[in-house]
Length: 486
Image (cartoon, rainbow, N blue to C red; front, side, top):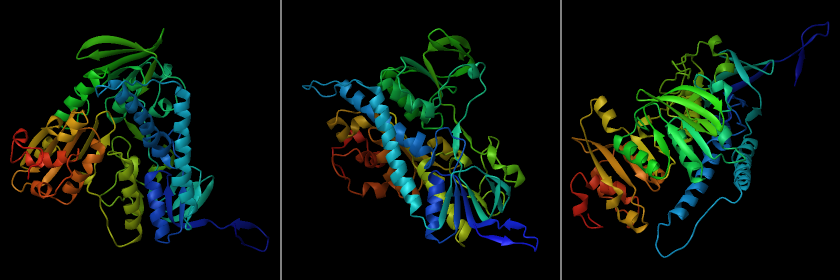
């Protein structure tokens, strides 16, 4: 580093490094921000480490999140499809021959994607320097990194989040699993208790169940997916129970302890004390932000009641020039949303544009089997906003393609404005729901009406016709229509 001489006594002081932009993080939001900053020609430093166990370059998603979990879920789903023997006249079955090979192949996929989608991308960013260090804030324009100060004009905090470990009596005395740990098990347990019935808990419950693990899932609220449409929650819970997963809702955990056979959990179910034992216990109890080492109290950056960074609609924090994006800002925690936020925060920081994200048009999915997906407002949410709405539900039993593939589990529920017929919310449970939701996402984003969907010709036979049938259901009884109507 270039140095300057300060006096005749030959004392020497290094000049402080200076950058226009500092990105703290190395996941989806950070990389999207870095790519945009490089495109805009902004001299940027990206400082990567955070507190999430197992994260490397690329952050949670590629290392210990979406990529490895969806690979494992895909394998479990494939085995289940085969073993269900859906079609007559064919003999087939599937079983795990070598679980370690599955884990090694998963790890190989992660390494490959980390290299191709993150390390190689980073190397091509001419205006971005990367440091694999922790960073803290001295003030709104100075970072402390590896005992050195770095001067910056603007800052983006994108440090993500990690598993929230609740304060449960006895938990610290047992060898519990987080989702990061569970993805790297070298041996399958015979049984597992999962605490938490949100997206992560449900995905892992079904994944391990497909691998032959006996699963009990404990959920605090009276139903899984408590913020989703009740029809979707009801049917998914029943489908999962039918597949052999023991789901217990309305529970309060009293104590966790080591016992012969693994881990024992004492809990209350609607006021009645019960106890279960399993070989392993997995926490799916939400996420907590990686903010402890940032020294945010020195800057005045405000946090919410759960410690997540507060931002406005333009992704700026309470301190001018400091932005935040991704999971460190709280729900919804979605990889694609984090990337969009990182991109837009960078544009907002270095241009006169003030870009915003309409969360109502952001789709989300849970990769259970069947999948569930949603976009926009639920019936209840619309009512709470004072929107006069109407809603209809169409079962997949009325969908021709579902009958053809012999998988009629599922439904689609559509919420529209009662007066203008604009689509304001859609939820789907069924085969490929995560792919099907994007037509609805476009409809919500561009304020399309059910007539716009009906007037769009859909390929027959496809599962995507479900969206058209949902729109048609506001005018007709679907069971009274032929396969191709209107």
